[in-house]
Amino acid sequence: MYVYFRYTVIFGLLLTGMFGFLACQKERVEIEKPHPYTLDIPKNFPSDLNIPIDNPLTEEGVKLGRFLFYDGRMSGRNQQDSLMSCGTCHIQSSSFECGINHPKFKDGHPFGLTGIKTPHVMLPFINLVFNNNGYFWNGMIHPSNPNSERRTLEDIVYMGVIAPHELHGDSIRTVKMIQSIKGYPELFEKAFGSNVVTMKNISKAIAQFIRTLISTNSKFDRYCRGEEQLTYQEYKGWIIFEEEADCANCHGSILLTNNLFFNNGKQTDFSGANEDTRDRFHYTGITSDIGSYKATTLRNIDLTGPYMHDGRFKSLDEVINFYSEGIHDSPYISPQMQFASNGGMHLNADSKAALKAFLMTLHDNDFINNPAFARPALFPDNSN
Ligand code: HEC
Ligand code: HEC
Image 1 (spheres, rainbow, N blue to C red):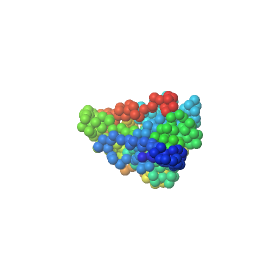
Image 2: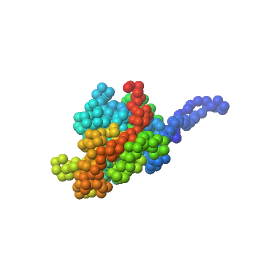
Image 3: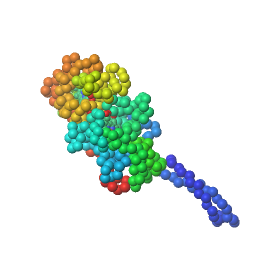
Image 4: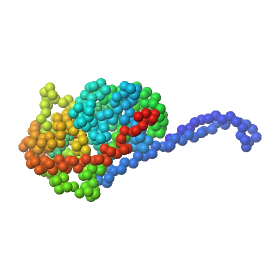
């Protein structure tokens, strides 16, 4: 309970008494405590959530975070020249990626206000609250990161505001801008007990909103809960995914990812001019991490092309062909890529079609249409 004590000096007569006196009285002004936000998580999902003790989910925090996430003024510029919010790139209809058909970000490769491209293609926001193994393609945003400002989802918000390839903002200007917008200070007070806007509370609010972005209602989910049947082809694809093609070694469990990092055998320049200095190796220094990246979730995978950290595959067919016959063996390839020495598992056309049909069952319409995740129609100052 947020309780504020205001000391009011009251001069006056005590009506019940015979004489006047000076009274010093405590006046209690109570601001309602924020209400806990309940995540609706089915029983077959993990219970180990990535929610820090100092930033529990609250209705008020999530509501504020949603406004800030979609507000172009977060770059610290005024409405006229502010062109970018988190939601410019992380778009709900594309599972909070920009999608391959974005009119501006050709081939799904976004750039920030400066025009500088992001080093990798995008990652979606989907079930990040279940990820305790680090964020970004290389997992560098992790509690063990020696850089204390790059450890949590909250830190990523800060980085997104500042980065020249994203909002290209400035923390002082952004705070000043949000503080000056009618309606925001009140929302900060409700969420965090103070109407003074800070980068810390901005980051907390947006991180809370991102943690609510949960997908649990794909056809595959309904199948797992016994609510809907898969077709024969989808079922066959699932068996291939789980057993024949070993996809589940890395994209397994109900999350369709184990949130770990692997070298999955793409043809890669490990030392030449095209070497990627942002693979997992460049973060951990461990040789077996050369060419390793996050095995992303395959939920809503139909929406998030182009595929892989560098967007080298434009379609799911290209990805399936790669795993089937395009694997490039190297000293760094993950032992989980069991068909590596053969160049892949060599699926026939029927099996490829079945595998693709299964991947399409991971599409979650409710997630991309959930009004609670959408851009608000009106912002706190009633602008749109
Ligand atoms: C210009 C487009 C762009 C904008 C604007 C942008 N992002 Fe991103 N975001 C990306 C890209 C690209 C990645 C993948 C980064 C990587 O791993 O190399 C990413 C990754 C992330 C991730 C990590 C997801 C994961 O699974 O690890 C989070 C969280 C995130 N962004 C939050 C934000 C927030 C919050 C904002 C607003 C402050 C924002 N982003 C603005 C492009 C953008
Ligand atoms: C050894 C672990 C491993 C196995 C086995 C594996 N993958 Fe992957 N997968 C990864 C990694 C790591 C990435 C990201 C690589 C990158 O970005 O360079 C990835 C990326 C993908 C992507 C693109 C994701 C995106 O967001 O761009 C798809 C689709 C995919 N895998 C499907 C499959 C399928 C289907 C199978 C089985 C035929 C499979 N994977 C087997 C580790 C694996």
